[in-house]
Image (cartoon, helix red, strand yellow):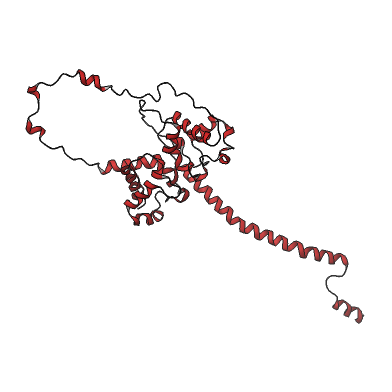
Length: 291
């Protein structure tokens, strides 16, 4: 009896080949599951970052303009597709900003071209992803379609330009006011102003601050909002004091110079046709809203 007790004391938990196989199997399986768990834990951080990016994109969409009322000059010359691209689309499509298919990138445009011209134009008019409706610009629907055709054909598309709708793009007669001026009778000598009156110099007027603020907001809504509303591609986010602080320290003149020349993903003048004064007003508008 004592011999049996001593024998049991010296034996381990594995008493037969079946238990040995189970122990060997578990020694390999358990570490595998531990490694898989660690990988999932680490990758969950990346998914959280992607979720933040998605949330930021969704916020940019919520900040887009729901609608607008514009009075366009029906007599102005019709802009070409290239002019529409340079004036509005290049801000994102020149560098592929915010997922926009890059200009002349056949691989990026390849999946989109089979959708057809109507689908591509509707995406531009209604907005898609980070792109605001009509690209956030002031072009007519027909001009937007010309811009889409210009970009699509530059990436391998074969879309033909449609004819402009009746009444769109007509040029104003250059000499419309000449006959009216000719019909005016010459003023009589007795009606000429006194020498003292014409000798007075004209008053020098300046643009009121309110008008400058309105011009800055208008340019922001038209061109700057595409990237600055959500801080796309590193652009300082609208209203973000911390993001604008380093730029404010450099001064308005330096910021204007950067806007004129372009920097990073931002093309020169934000791919707009704005004047230096309009750019300055837009920068001041964004700075004022980041204080």
